[in-house]
Image 1 (tube, helix red, strand yellow):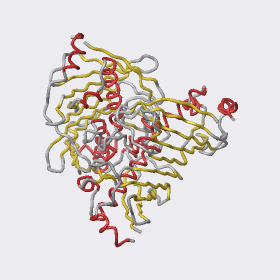
Image 2 (tube, one colour):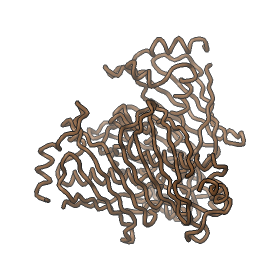
Image 3 (cartoon, one colour):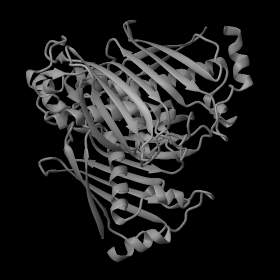
Image 4 (cartoon, one colour):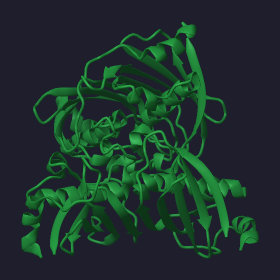
Length: 134
Length: 134
Length: 134
Length: 134
């Protein structure tokens, strides 16, 4: 398993009139979290696209246990539990400032060759960085 | 079962550099679709909050089968399959301009008393409008 | 002068915890309004990009006189006061459900050749549609 | 004059199909920048609202000199040039990863008593922190 941790501060524009972070903004938090988890591994999604591979999302699942509030410094733990093939699954656990586990998410993404639009294997460089964890 | 249909046009700011609607914007489409489905039923979510009941989201699930593109007039079919209790489940089927079924979503929401923060039954007026469909 | 009118309904996710539409979402309203103003003129921005011309924004100005609220059906009047050259200026006047003038905006955009990245004249087809108004 | 500096990384969902950060997302960057500039001064906007004062935006102005790209670590310099009264003006200068000055923004905000909805003086604590700079 590969796991990485990062923080994200809830923006004012991300709240709604209920006074909490709008449910539609968590997918954007997931994006930031998984991109940072790759960066900590030593590569960036920006490089991946530059290598001709993009990662569109196939599935997204969210469970909202407790709300997140404006200006909270949220901790997001991103994890990859299975060795990726042509698809990769990321899990996200979000903790609020009091350390309470408030949210669970899961995203399934494909590796797609930008030129052909066809599914493909992940870049070798990416697999090499991930291999030690599985 | 209750079913309602509406259209939504993809905005430029909703696309990302892949050239498709960003995956994080579908939750906002769901929101528009379920609010319009209630309006077609003869009530608004705005009134619901004015009556002291809010509907936070507990779960959200999305399956991205094909991408949506900028300026497409998407058709969203919203459906409620089971009679709601203290929770209500909405399903969303999205079709692109060619009539292709490109996306499926599902959202579970709670009815919550704004004053107490506690789960509650849906307003009676709401149940009366829905009853004929179940 | 060319003028067009359209409506836009404020989404829940566009509000913030002040209970009003977040100030950062008006630029997206402007985008919808100017795209619809072009559509009413008989062309779409989608076609413009397909013809190889994009329109990046150079300047944006907003004056918030009164807040917009969730679920309000806002009326946006878009106007072009001067015949466009390599640049085009759009003005936006927003009215709330009570007909009150709540917001003024202005956006200056360039016409840019997508292939070369260089400023260019607007497509002839576009100028032909606009000419009767100046 | 008071000046503060912070960085913000452009998110994927903030880009549009032109391949740049969508013009409508800069207002959200300004928000993050001014909130961080207050935090560096020793107070938070969260506390300000808890003290019963909110700061709605009255005017927003943006000049887009060059585009920002996905994943760039943008530097934002926020500055307050005049001592605030019942209004406060923030300026923002954004620099890309190569140190190029790509964007200028300016926002005028009011101090408003949340309970009465009326304009008010800034909280004393806030003025005390700012005074040494003017």
